[in-house]
Structures are given as C-alpha cells and as structure tokens.
Image 1: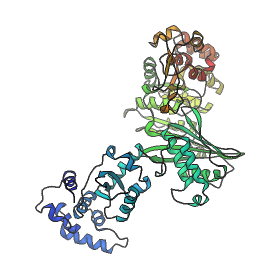
Image 2 (image 1 turned 45 degrees about the vertical axis):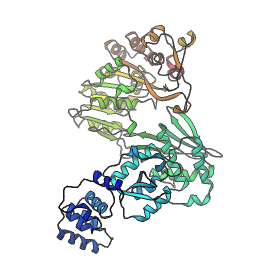
Image 3 (image 1 turned 60 degrees about the vertical axis):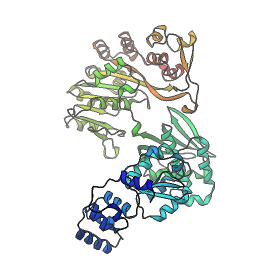
Length: 597
C-alpha cells in the first residue's frame, strides 16, 4: 500500500479509537474486523455466517450481516477496505473526475459495475469501486482505460450519484447509453451504423436502433427542444426538433428502418406495436444524467407510415416564477391582485403552445400555501405541484372537465384551475363556482383578451353571467429572445420603427433612445441568433365600464378599444417595448401579433 493510499485511508475513513491497532486487523477475517470496529457480538457473527452458508442464493457474508441488521453497509465496506488493505472514501467530488477518463468508460458499464475513475496515480488510475472483490469488472475497466487500477472503496450510492453528475457534464457518443451529440453529422454517424443488418437483431442497449432513439432524446433535452417530430416520407424519414418554437431538421434515417424506430418508441411508451392503423397516445418517463424528463407520445397513421411526435417536459427546467416569464413590473402587480382574489374567473388566452399552462402554474405556485385548498383538473397533468390536488381528465371513464369540476365543488376548494374551457357545460360550472366564492383560473383559445368574452358568448353563456364573474383576462404569445452572446446593435430606419409600432415614447420608456438589436448567430445558439423565449402579454382588467359593454353583448373590437383607452397595453405594444429593450426583434413580434396590425 502506497503512502498516498495510507494517508487517504486515514483521512477519509475515520474510525473511533480502538484497543486493537488498525494495522493488526489488515488481512484478518471480515467477522473479526467488524467485531472490533463495529462492536458486533462474535456469537451474532457466527449465526450470520451459518445463515450465509445455508443461503441457496449464495449470499455474501457482509450482505448476511447487513440483512440481519447487525451492521450497516458502510461499516461492511470499511471493514472490507481494511481487510484488503485498500483506502476507503465516503464521498466523491464529481467536479474532480477528469473528462478524458470518463469518456473512456461507457455509462452502462460504469453503473452496472458501480465503478468510476477518479484520477491518475502515477502510471495507475485511481478508481472508486463499490465491490472490490469483483476482479473481473476491474480487469475489464483496466482494459478500457489502458492502465492498471488503484482501487478505492466507496459506497455504491455515492458512486452512482457521481456517475450521473459526471456523465451530465461530459459524454461520448460511442460509449454512453444517452449520447451527447453536438452536431447533425454525429446523429448521421449513428444512423449509418444501421447499415449493418446483424446489429438490428441485437437485443441489448448497444443495438443501433436503441442507441439512435436514446441519442435523439438526449440531444433534444440538451438543446432545449420542446418536441421531436418523426415524419415518414416516401424515400426516408425526416426527424426534426422544435427549438424555441421553430422546427429544425436534424437527421434523415433510411426508410427501411422506419418500422424499427417506430416499434422502439412505441415500446418505450407502452403502446401496441401491432396496431398501425389507429392513432395512439402514450407517455414515456426517462431519466437523463439524473434529470427527470416526461415525454408525451402521439402516433398517427399516414400514407407513408406512422408519424410520431414526442413532446418533452424537462421537469428540472420548468419555470414556476411569474417574474421569469417576461412580465413587466406593473403587469406583475396586476397579476398579483388577480390571483389573490377570493372569487372570480381569471382567463388566460392564446393559441396552442403560447405558454398559457405555464403561466397558470406560475400563478398557482405563487399563491400555494397550507391555508389554501387548491384543486386542478388538467389534460394531462404536466407538472406536479406539491400540496396541490391535481386530477387528470380521462374520457374512457367519463371524467371530463365538467364532471371533475362539478365534483370539486364538494371538496371545499379555495382555488380551482381548469385546464381549458371547451364547452358550455364546463363554462357554466366554472362561472357558478366563481359566483359562490371560489377563485377559478382557466384557459381559452382566442387571439386576444377581448376575444375571450365573445368566445364565451358563442358557447352560449349568458352575458350577465360573464359580466358578473369575469375579473381579468390575459392574452399572451411567446417570442424568441436574442442570443446575448452575438446580438448586434444597429440604428433602425423610421419605416421599420413605424411598422413595429415603436414610437419615440416607447424607445424612451425602454431607456434606449436610438438603437435596436438584430440576430446574428453563433455556436452557442446553433447559428440561429436566438436563445430561449419570453412572453408578451395583453392584460385586461374587467372594470365597470367593460362590464356594461359585456351586458350589451357588443363585439370584441369595441371591448378592446375601451380597454386600450383605459390604459391596456396590447400584445403588439408590449412586443414593441421588448424590441426597444433589446430582448427580441421586430420580426419576431410581428410574426405572432399580425392580427393587431
């Protein structure tokens, strides 16, 4: 044992002062060592030894002691380290694990063998091992690393946690189950391996089809993609990611592997792989480098085969703070007033994918507390909120929005969130709930805030019910944000400012009297010039004058004009303000607010 190893054992594995010197215990039987360092009764040790010898599954002696609750797993590992004259390490700093060593070890092998390289020790490589007696795995690792090993004993849970952190930071396409793919060419290289027919019959996780699907999922999460589209075409398959609301093609696998890719994804989602004529929906729950990701899976039959769309939700990246969703300070004050009311209906409107549900979750997270009973009914439940009772719509058992909402009223709620108001029955129950002392939050599909009023009227809701229950409507859109690393300042022309409704007053309010910014593109933003998205909002408070207009059943244009006269900032005006602040571009704002022009 080297001097360095002796020091490591002394510093990382402190043992209480003993009557027997540690040096005298090295090489002794495990039972004797545990009797000294853990105070195990020798009689109990003999009983555990007899149980271990009689066990048909070949239980190890240390495992038998742990099973009998005579010692802990950590005490057994310390004793084994002492017996084998190896250092013991109770924790691992993942930041100190060299990237070049981690790349040489496949994540599958590292997790199965519970081993991870820690660094170089002269010609050898220090490796944390959970089972120092597994010499076959150590031999294999030595071959992978191309150097002899210097084992350090560590708890298996500590090693697995370090593996997750290390492989989240650095990865190799050939060695990881979840490969970190940087370019489209990398994915195409994986797809090229599909040319080998024999590989398609492999059943383990190294099969190219499995590795390709895993690669797509890993890269999609890494690049913040919200959706993966797998679209079969006549001669090949188009695979696209939706990043910041824009679809971008990443790979075109060969057509003949379409069925294999579809089957693999359907197996992961628990779908019927034999059914190819009907649409199917499923859900995949995966963990990538310690991060939980929910995937909503949808398949539909097309003329060229099954089309697959996967919607990704990285739970660790979900924003539940309204202040981070793009609201201005004055808008946040109004929102705080709405979501803290004791009763009434607050609606969030906008097209699919405009961030309505995220805004509602942000509002619920802000008011969530033990003194409020909050219930939600959603389709589906996308984000788990601690302390909130969340119910998922299930059409098969007739659990609709209306039926769920009707049951909620018998649960003594304070706040109710309805995923979407789709029909007259749901709308009427929500209104009745708000009129009987409950705050109701929901979404509805309209282009602007005022349009929500006429949409309810179109469903058949009486105007007096809308006027008496509605307290606020928020319309929103998502626009891409300029990449801070490469955005470029320029002086806009008067025509450009006019087209985007950017007046001198807006420029001055944004603290930017002369210049705007445009997208350029750099490696950090995949050459798009944009990174991330933010919201633009149109927040309409329902005051007495607007209530009078609602009672008269006027058109949405009249209601909007009155709200603007009362100080409401439209979607286009808020977008113009964000352009003036240098957060986005006029083209982005105009692309989502065309109806306001």
